[in-house]
Length: 258
Ligand SMILES: [Zn+2]
Image (cartoon, rainbow, N blue to C red; front, side, top):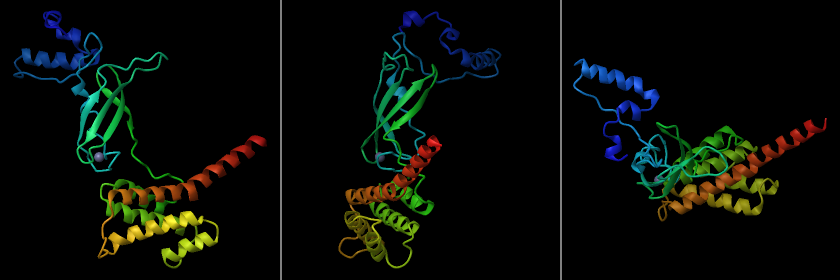
């Protein structure tokens, strides 16, 4: 707001009504000599409805993990923020956008927010932090979730992906013997296709390298770990999520008929 406009304007005129009482009581305490002074940090919307974009910098402070690399408490710096609410013609609530970069992986994280006149509220992050699907049985699901959350540490993620695949086969009744034999048995029973089994063996071998501190190739690359985790997720979708969805669909259709 230009100085000429602001000069002579009582601060009550530029303070959100909900904040006014707190401000006034601080102000009165100052006048009464109870405090030397006070400072209240605020966001102000300019007359053209734009805001200082640096104010969106702390929007994602509460994000527990970087949705790209999964590192905990990521340091995210704002690289771009919408200078004003994005115009829209469908009458819906106006939205603000910001893009951040993660100091760990250097990748971009987006946030969509609404502004209530005082504060921004994040509606959604892009990408969304990955969650292992609830239709995957508990033990395998926890391994898969940990695989998602350790992608910044490829060896750990690969081992967790192997454990997730192991847990999924056990949940399907393949409990005895080595993972190697159980994968092949699942192919024999048509639970896995040959292609999926080949992939499952890759995940198994990948998780063995860090687990057994392989002399020649102990470590997984970030890409190898990501592929292992993607397969574990795909296998979970195939074995549990899809079948649960189909079962629910059939039940709903039957309920509709009767
Ligand atoms: Zn990151």
